[in-house]
Image (cartoon, rainbow, N blue to C red):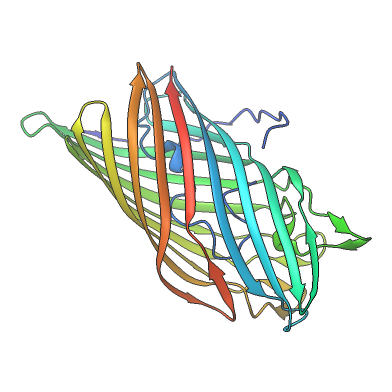
Length: 306
């Protein structure tokens, strides 16, 4: 048994290279589950470096708060390179540098406005510290408990305009604000069955234009079954509850709410330490404020450990 009683947090070298938007942070109810999913299955080993990338596709729509007769629609595609580094055997440092494209439209009757902003989103830096690990050789079982913390940074553009007018905040590549979060992760490993569960809270500061994304509670429970050494099938239940956004002192009626999604997925070990993965988040229960819809989120990715 190993118990760490001290919180040790090292600095993460912020690679600022122009690469591709945060995990759907510009949608009040999009993006649920673990903010540090890149490190969820990465038990730290001193000196280990992991590289990963994800391609994410999601859709959402909402009634316009400024014009109730209009509907906003958003299709978001994100390419997210990620780096996970373990300087010691109890800590993962995580960097996510997203590039995002958003296809946004505002339709009112026969009139439609549209924009397709593209560029660097909100870079995310985080850390996951494992405070408890216990292995039972007799049952081939390992348990882990970890705390996580981090924040998204206001690196994405937040001033995209259309015909001289600034487009909706949810259509901007970045939030224009910091997005700190903190949470806890529990993992149980006993091949061929593995289980992980996480709970996180996320807040936002107010952007320079006075927009404030609602605070959110995110959770995830995922089971992984590995019938073969190189193949794993997963099934998860991801959720999010977000409070309404604010524009100045005004609550935004068509933002926030409750979302629960079933998340099936598959992982394949191609060669060596290279893994490919695919998963989806399929909404099965929602209680969204105002008039909103959220579609299925699809994620494709790969991870290489060195």
